Figure 1 (cartoon, rainbow, N blue to C red):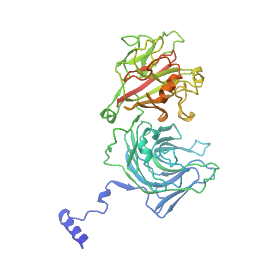
Figure 2: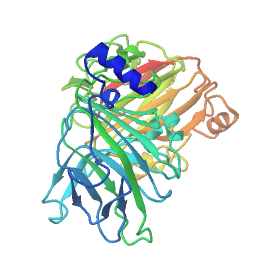
Figure 3: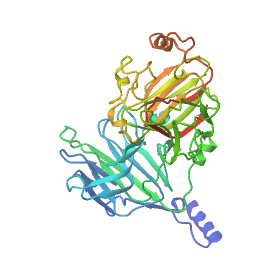
Figure 4: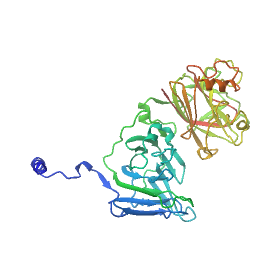
Length: 455
């Protein structure tokens, strides 16, 4: 009776009853709950069926990754759905703005493009962003530890993705996760992945998706916490989000503003080159003279710093922090160093102890724990990141993966220094603040997209 009166009142006010779907305005169902109408299968031969209002994808042996793909392509959108993973061994993903190359994979074809990762393993990278069939990981969820705790094992998890312009943002169970700025694809299909299992015993595992809906009009970006790190693949550019949350460029892409020689008042006239948006230390093995290390004009204590670097064959350099320039060192100024090195071709990789002079290590102190798949080849850009928290906890990242951490000034730290080449340098690495230094080791190394936020 109350409902009837409400409808009647609304009719009098507006001339017609409000639709039941008024609160769902702008949303379109991608799955009708009964059939796979509007979808097609590409890639492998996993089984896709409809069971009680749910799309079920079941693993089968000896087949590549399988994808249930929307027949329609999408550009800007917000996508929501729920997914249930069968266990911690099964891996899956949701393709976004993706494509199909029919000639790849020996004529079997290959799906490629952005992927929302579904990872129920202990790694916990669900809601990270992967580039399927192309570049690999773009936003490993090591970059957002808070979101790693949001996935719920053995239950339906709520997935949300926002693609607007060149920005992709993800959520898992309403927790903000990944923030990616990338210009590779503006449109493409959406797909549900059943990952290939080879000949493993995981055949018959079923992933379930339900309540799949999309909104393509009247979109506006949802707020994200200021603490979420942005992977910005536009060189030397900050987003409005980054600027509003305290990030600033250390290198503007066109000038030496903010930098000077470590042992001079101005920027070196030789040995360094600024061209094509890159800050490059030139090789001294040819006609170029060494320019020496360069340092920031400003001092930094607690900070979050990101940078990209490209290593030439046999190249050696480093990004140092807490550089004081008061150590009287004859060679390069002293400081804690994020090692930049061609591990395969430079002899320094085999020196030191336990690999503590290899790429992304804390030079001569702590080795970086990394795997080959997260090291980009020579001639390609790699992403470094150094975070120094106000409590002196420090982290190194390589291409979005945390490779080491330590506590500056701790008993363990002092022991490591005492066992290193810096043992005779009192107070090494313990300054309250210092400059950022890019090292000239005489090898061709390029830097770009250097940005920093004071913590």
